[in-house]
Length: 301
Image (cartoon, rainbow, N blue to C red; front, side, top):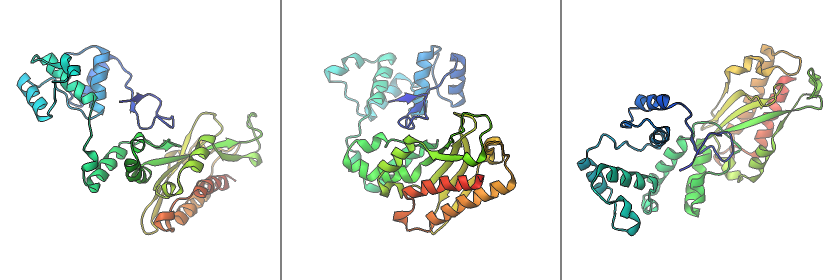
């Protein structure tokens, strides 16, 4: 298992978020989710319980010894191997340690024997857990296991997740406090360019949800602008973020007017309509990302 506190990194989006808090806050978090932790008060033990909760693993601490032995029998856990010698025994501590060990070392030898429709449900369930929008991601670990899993799961990854188009301000006058509006430009970052140029066109075509954001005026601050969803039969939606009418869209010394908002939204909708009108296999192409960038620029002029 892998966890991270840096979800913005292109290779961290699939990792589990770390939980930072006091032992009291951690116990409260677990109690809110009705996750039993016994009398644990140590942060490292509570941290493991939170991780198990996020992974969807049950808590064993309210089970009796008989119930724990029954779980071990149902799961057909074999303790005869020499490496399992430490986990043999009938004390509650040994039974808990054995179940925890098995949870930490899951086995999926028969996964590829499942019918394709069931495997697809597993992929969909897995990718649906990536709730945050993803910026220029590397391909998920599930797709690196073998060629068959890569072929089956990658299309669902691109069709399920929400991908972020993050625009950055480019201006020769960026260092000055009051740059001229005429110099205002938006560009696509190097990481996003690498993602666009290295991703197979058939995978880009599978994307159905885009999130447009931009960074300007305040270096490092990213403003959310639009969510674009591509449906079936030419349908699409363009949803303006709540920050659109705020200071987020102050370009140089200019303030945002309703006319600027309408012009920008109309430009984004034109690109979305063009994408939605294409055949399924050619929905989203690389140039669409640059068209959306130009749509934001046009709206600000």
